[in-house]
Length: 473
Image (cartoon, rainbow, N blue to C red; front, side, top):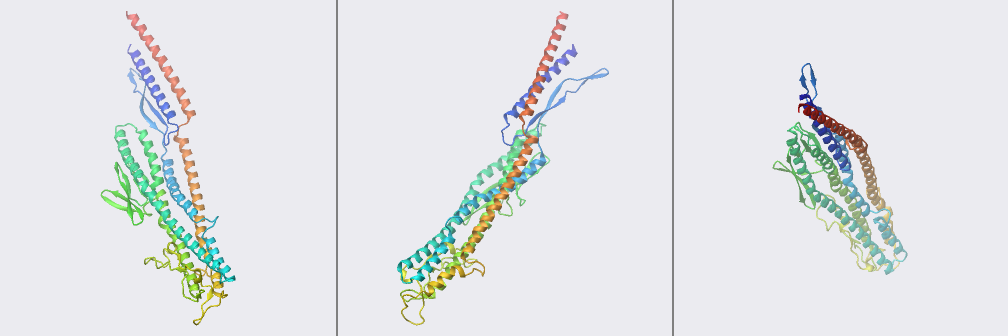
């Protein structure tokens, strides 16, 4: 009779194990489209055998744990590639805005420069024509306005970057806090010998997201927790302790500050990675360089036009007038004389008779109405004057558009390459640890047959026990 009870226990355990295995397979199928989900499976071990005389008899099977498929090497590679993808992604939107500001396909500042100096050429044919003189003023105003607008648009792009950085702080803090809580939950569960599979999947997903946005590096600890650090070495998560990010206004910019252990540290390009590093690089390095080139262009145009205009005389025989208001007058002391010149450039001439198309008289006298010598000299500035002895105004402006174009193309290549690498690694991950419907269906049939066989075995043992009991009656 004891042997039948042992067989009954074995049948019961087999039934329970197959049922639990079917539940795990069903959970895998349910989460096939869940991002970051890793396939789970039951770990089965035989129940310790009992000694019957000279041999041992098995006592059935038991589920010792529910494991998940995981590949540490692939996870580490994914984290690295997400950092690269985030960096390229952080630059994409800004470069698209810069391409809009410095459009190379339609009318732009180079077109305005040509129109301005062409109007001087047209004026030289009829220097006394007030309509042509007004055209010079209008084209000069249009050139100044477009330079002003481009400079202002650059400031708007910087403001957009600052707003994006500021808007990300709350979401980043939420993820960092959740990560620390998951560390604590995993430790609490697994210290009892169980596996926190769902929490580990979620934590791995957060690592990838924080790698993409912040460029964090993950370090496994002996107790099952994971510490996160920024590329500069500053901690973001240590065990179950989460640090906090804060967006702080610093002049016109937004600075990220990390609060860790009662100490606050400002974050910059040397301490960040991923998407935020891409935005910081655009804001603090690339855009200021573009702005400096634009300011230099505005300064050189304003200065050279003013020098030549002051050397000529208007219809009222007055010389020494500036055509443009000196852009450096409106700027405070700066690192370069041309800083903010593009934003401040404007036309000083308001009356057409003040246009200096004639050469200034050497002695007090009335200029000839047909004198066009200064207008001719003015019209040649656009082609003959070279900034730093290398570029005329249009080719110097071309430096801006070409640099933005090259940077955009490079960014597209980097973004595409990083995206391909991420996709390839994600596909590899899915192949190793993801859910395959074909495999799960095979497992489902396997455990279904095991459940049916266990039920048949249990039914047979029950009939045998009924027979034994009826014999004793």
